[in-house]
Length: 311
Image 1 (tube, rainbow, N blue to C red):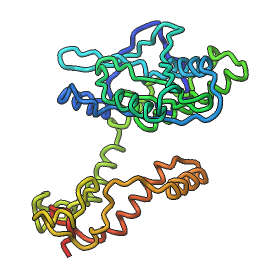
Image 2 (cartoon, rainbow, N blue to C red):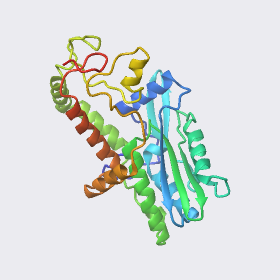
Image 3 (cartoon, rainbow, N blue to C red):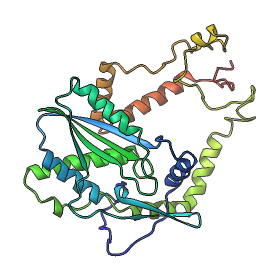
């Protein structure tokens, strides 16, 4: 769902498009592991206050219809994969309405619903995605979405959520959503832009820049004690001190306080959101930037193949 100038899609004829490089990676990755839900992208937005479910459904359906990426069908011919936009009939209701207000624990019931759905393996040749409005009470709803990564990434999901919110506000004001123009450009513009880049001198210039930038980072491969690999420290493993107790590698300098997956404290999260709002970006972008800055400060020297400092 790229932010390109809006150009109405021609729905009178079938248009086959090449896959982007990112889509090709997802396509073949899913074929290697066809029963895995690993390419699901999920998001849950908490809505406090009254929600007109009819207007919300109309806003979501219109936003989904305007978005090429949410209406893709993939065709194969002699091993070659192409994609085309196939929109459902006008009036198709894509929103699942789920009333959990009478559950003993509505929040827990909502979490179970989302967890079960995230385990779903979508159709790779024609992803259906999933949109649900979970009613936990008269003034509390969860809007849950699941996309297949071949169609939507994190930025695309954020743009779609913003579009639905805008259309809902328009509908609440009595505007005709059928007259709303696409907020983003057609998929063909994104495909054409990538093709132009890959055929341009910019590609080789960028390749040369990044190849030179990291030329000294893996002299003898990942198994070399004398190499200088990129930072490979993991945060989803047991703490180094715990591993050493089991006979594993002893902790290296500065690794005893390695984060192991605890939830961010609420004050930290609130600070991320305030900082993001002040710079017109998202809290997740601020978090990524903070992690990059932290890594730069804590990784001044080379690491061995176990991710431990060499010096």
